[in-house]
Every structure is written in C-alpha cells, then in structure tokens.
Image (cartoon, rainbow, N blue to C red; front, side, top):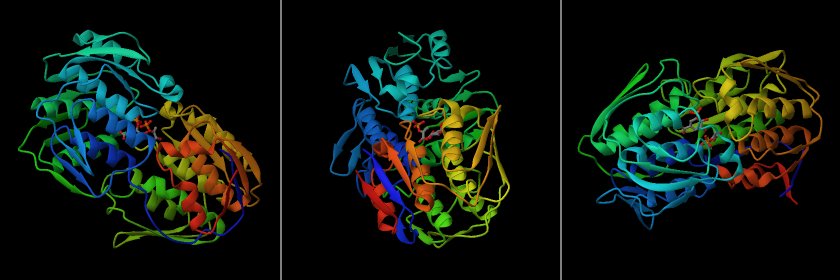
Length: 410
Ligand SMILES: O=C(O)C1=C[C@@H](OP(=O)(O)O)[C@@H](O)[C@H](O)C1
Ligand SMILES: C=C(OP(=O)(O)O)C(=O)O
C-alpha cells in the first residue's frame, strides 16, 4: 500500500493506541490468571501474542482470556508473524513447561537473532533444532535458577520471568549491563499487579508465585506509538492532546518521550491522564536510548527539524529490530533533507529548517513508516509498503488524517 501525505498542520485530540509492550504482557498474564480486557486489541503483534497463549491452553471468550487449568502445548506449529517479543517470551516458557513445537515467523522475524539464547538453552538440556527460525524446540527442564550470559535482547529475561512465575518461583541472573531493562521492569509491574512477586535488581530477577488476582480493564495507551502524532504536531506548528495514557513511570522508559520532547524545545507535558504537545523552538539533545531503544525513531522524527545536533547513544541493538534501525533512521533523516550519521554506538542528526518532500520505501519497519509519516506531515512524502504499521498500530494513517494531515491511501 502507498500513502501520499501533503503538508498540513496536525492538531486536535485523540485516544492513544493500546500499548504494544503492556498489551502483550497482559495477554501472556492470562497463562497465570484470567484477563478481562475492555476490548480485544487488533494489531499483528497482538494477534501473535493471542495465538501464542491459545497454543498453551488459554481460551478466549468475548474480550476475556481465561487461564488454562494446566499449561500444555495444543499445537505443533506456531507462527509468531513479526513479533520478537512474543517469540522470545514463548521460548523460555516452552523450555520450562515442556512439549514440542515448531516456531516460525515472517521474513522480518526470521532475520532477528536467536544465536545468543539458543546455545545457552541447549546447554540447559532444551532440544532446539536451529539457531534461527523456523526451529523446533522441545523443553521440560526442571531447574528454577538460571544464569544467562551475553544477550541481544531483554525479552528473554521477561520470558523467563513468565516461565518461572508459571513454575511457582525461581530466579534468573544475567549481565548487569543488559540493555532494555525498562521492559523487564514493565514485566515485573504487570505480574506484580496480578499477584506474583517479582523483584528486579541489577543482573538478577527473583520471582515468587503469590495467590493471583484477575485483571479487568483496558490496555492503557502506548506513549511511543502516540509520539508520532505528537511529532507531527511539533513539526507542523500544531497542537495535540492524547488521552488514555497511564501516568509516566518513575524509571527511564518509553514514557520518557514526554520529557524528552520538552527538552528538545517542544511544549510537552502530562496532566490528568492527557499528554499535551505543541510546537516550540527545537534544539538538539543527547540521549542514551539503551534502556528504551524504541525511543530512537520518535526522537529522530523531531531531531530532523531541531537546531544543532541530536546525539542518540546506546543504539547498537537497534541494528537487530524489524530493520537495521541505525541505517534506516539515518537514510530516512537524510531523505527529508537533514543530515544523519550512524557511527559505532551513536546516531548523530543535524536538523534543518528546510525539510524537503521525498519518497520513502518503508523497510517493513512500522516505526520507520510512522516516523516518515510524522515528518511527511511537515514536508510532504510518498511512502511505499505503508501497511507495515499494522504490526503495532493499524489505525495510524486514519488517526493522522483525523488530526488534519492530508493522507491519501493509494
Ligand atoms: O520487551 C518488550 O516489550 C520489548 C523490548 C525491546 O526489545 P529488546 O529487549 O530486544 O531491546 C523493544 O525494542 C521491543 O519493541 C519491545
Ligand atoms: C522491536 C519492536 O518489537 P518486537 O521486538 O516485539 O518485534 C518494536 O516494536 O519496535
């Protein structure tokens, strides 16, 4: 699908799309307790998570995900589409719970690294047929204390937390400098909210299984999926108000985008459940995104028009996302007329006041497509393969249009 966007001010109010990381965690929590959602979410990654938990015995009745009496694999093949989160959650769960299943994904997921965890699982006694998808895994190991070495993703730690909560408790140790720890903290928050006792320390997580309580409510809004609407307003001199968001957590994470946009000179603040954003005199900043790598495309979307240089550090693992995001962020920024470089563990962006209309071939990366959509609202853009936003936010183009941006689906 191609999308043509013409310059127009983005302004208005909208409800944040449901949080991808939070929603996937609530879906996986249905392995431990009943989860009654206000509505079932609809994106490719949410469908992958629902398929994953249904393959382990969860039943879906209306908007309720009902905990199975016993966790066991009900299928011998499971396709996780493009979701590395669901893939790296279910691998430790099958490793501990047992059973045999072939896991697969789309061409993007097949490129994502598993060579960091598979040899470690094999040494633990898990049978795994390959270091990449498609692979067949046969689990059933009895340990409840795990010591992991270098990993490319924090998602395995979250997966082990779920697996050990299912087992009734245990611990997992890992290198204290592991990145993306904000997502491990989110896993602990979700499981603690339904009665587990998860304690996160540097390099170690301890899990106890308390008496669980069911979850009832909506999936709260996603700060970073919302940040592309905010960026469109900032870049076009508009103003947006985004509702449905939880108060930002105290630790550094996806929600830090509110303060980071403010540091870049936009008017950006959270008040009574609503994120209010308006344009301002933009300036470059320096941010270490290692603990929340998904911030990078959202920061780059505003950095293209900021005076001076924006430096994103801690970006090495961005190379292993849906695309090599170091190179796709750099090429997208350059296409709009700003200047970007990917050097070692940094992305350096020098903004411009003269953004240019361009064409973007979306590299099957939803965040890059939404970044191009946000900047395109200020310069005009033609985006190929724009359907890739369906991974996390199928309503993105429709929402952008509701904010007054001229969006044409071709
Ligand atoms: O646990 C999660 O929900 C996620 C963890 C991060 O991946 P890594 O831990 O591989 O950095 C992030 O990029 C991804 O979008 C979601
Ligand atoms: C990398 C992402 O997701 P996942 O790792 O779950 O595929 C993302 O949403 O940017």
